[in-house]
Length: 242
Ligand code: DX5
Ligand code: ZN
Image 1 (tube, helix red, strand yellow):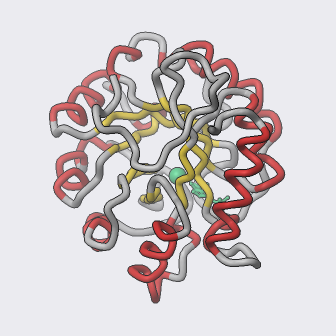
Image 2: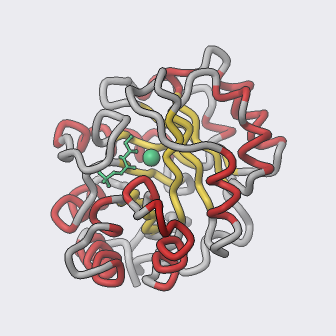
């Protein structure tokens, strides 16, 4: 189900269930200083991040436009960390091969944007990338039921997609637990939006293990090292770290 070599610097709490996925801090470059993207990505890796998260937006599926394959390729060239691409775009099947060629290790598509979700996940896996499904705050988990054999991750949007710097939606907490119960311990549960020192403990306690963090890392007042450290410390209080 998951990549044989797994993430580089992940740690698993001794009390975590057998096979539990490790804690992953995944800074979103949406919040980075894009005039210094290479420096920011290298800084996030040096700060101890486990994954680089790319928020791709098309201005149709979400009311914002971010960046595309060229930026993915530029990020790929700057880091050895896994690059996870979150496609907030309509008909993502059109761009799976392109984002894989641009260096994505995992491609996450929105169930709301896929008429044939099973086929899209097959397409992602066929490129050699990991496959994930993202769900907007209102979307029930039902569409995951019959694609679990193709899931490396589930991304629970904890804000309305489209913008960084939003406030965490507390209503998503029970959904995180329900997702973990549905997919079991061997799939990454990613949370995305409003994840910071205050919310990290709560989401991990509900079963999340991969924390997307844009503002709380790239715009932390104490800098990226402190941002990653504080997130990891808060998440460990929710019992996921060695
Ligand atoms: C929304 C984006 C944001 C981003 C993280 O579509 O997906 O959630 O990754 O933003 P912060 O961490 O700044 O809330
Ligand atoms: Zn995202």
